[in-house]
Amino acid sequence: MVKRRRVVWRIARTFAELCSRDNVSSRSTTSESVSEPRQSLQVVWFKRDLRTSDHGALSQASRSGPVLPLFIVEPMFWAQPDASARQWEFCAESLAELREALAALGQPLVIRTGEALAVLKALHRQRGIAQLWSHQETGNDFTYRRDRLVASWCREQSIRWHQPRSFGVIRAMGNRDGWAPAWELLMRQPVCADPAPLTRLGGIDPGGIPSACDLKLPSDPCPGRQRGGRSQGVALLESFLHHRGRRYAKELSSPLTAFESCSRLSAHLTFGTLSMREIVQTARLNNGPKAFVERLHWHCHFIQKLESQPSLEYQNAHRAYDGLRADDPQRLALWIEGRTGWPFVDACMRALRHHGWINFRMRAMLMSVASYQLWLPWRQSGEALARLFVDYEPGIHWNQCQMQSGTSGINTVRIYNPIKQGLDHDPEGAFIRQWLPELQGVPVSGIHTPWLLAQPPETYPHPVVDYEAAARQARDQVWGLRKGQGYRCEAEAIQRRHGSRRRRRARPPADNGQLSLELG
Image 1 (tube, rainbow, N blue to C red):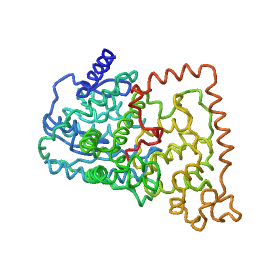
Image 2: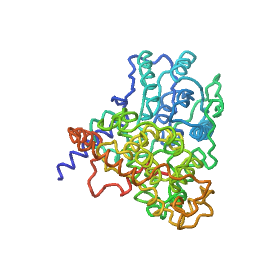
Image 3: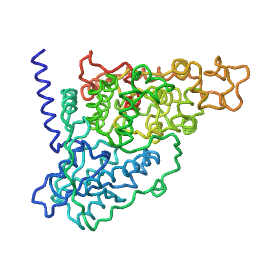
Image 4: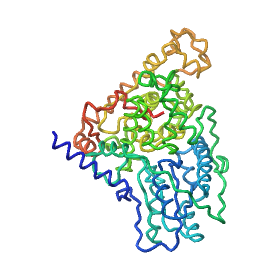
């Protein structure tokens, strides 16, 4: 056992050493310079790391020459089916605060709108790029393809592209051996040094931050949305660790308590206004909830899956489930609008639409109902949820969509009972009444099943389907495929590639099957 531990930690140290290198993998976009740079401009490309603290790329670049901090607003990215105005508005607020922080260092953030490669090419023609700096990113398919194009251009131009790690995600991993201790080593490393003072660059227009309207994003009212910006994230972390999180483990599952007792940091992790490492270290220093730190670990665990297998965004992890479900626009619309006829489900969906956030168990329930009772393909319902989540993180989201729809091949099939979930987490119907005004006058005895009342409310729909019969039929079809020839062989291969290697006593909390790990 001692020898085995030494081997695991030796592997982990090797991974940790890669933190400062530009690693190469199936998703790697690193470019090595083959000649001396013709000019000294260091371009720091901010992507989803909108901060100046614990920012490896900015810290290193600031000690290598004059820095041009750059954010590229890509209209084609924001036109993707998983993007929305609520996400952009959080990002824009974070950019405004980042610009102020960089201006205090000496050079404000430069913002350009357009296709990323075209922006970089124009900048190189005008000023010359000696080196390009950005954190490694595990985003969606759009960002992956964009980065491959940028990497190819950098090689052609002999521009070295440095990509230090930001999350606990490791490139070039064939399986999970050594991943958990490598994550721990990264989280224990000191945060990056603050950037050196920046030299003000003359003759460069900083550019404006476009509005959602400028980007032609569809109208997306979200009155309860969190505000972006590092100061907001710091305040949330402080209030969570010193006050709101005292009953975190007990209150994270019910939407009645989760909005207050959860950290609400998930959007700040998505856009990088705070780093994963500083959150972990601050939580441990202040004796934060262990369950919270555990979920930070699982945050990276799921992103690692997409890093290692980008096809998980579009393809079933286990191909036995290909073609299992069919599109149904009418059912999808009722689910999105919060009019399925199941009060607790509809209340959760309407709360999500209002806030851009809902707690983990409710996300799991929403996805489960869409996948089993409504029998919708996970990609179809997943895109709708992605747009509603201000904290949308592709690596977590798509893997959890597959888990909750039963296509991962290695997880227990979980079919949530929408009525039982309401009785468990909203027994008096307070949350339902808050979001479904048409049920205000319904007594507690009928609030979860109003269609069974002698006089059902006229303005609230009857259930789309019989939830129990639909669940039985779905279970039979999903489990039937698991009995097929060759299923186990493929499932074992998935487990070897993506399965956790953590010891049983270090397993995550029982509710780790969530759609978004409880960072927020």
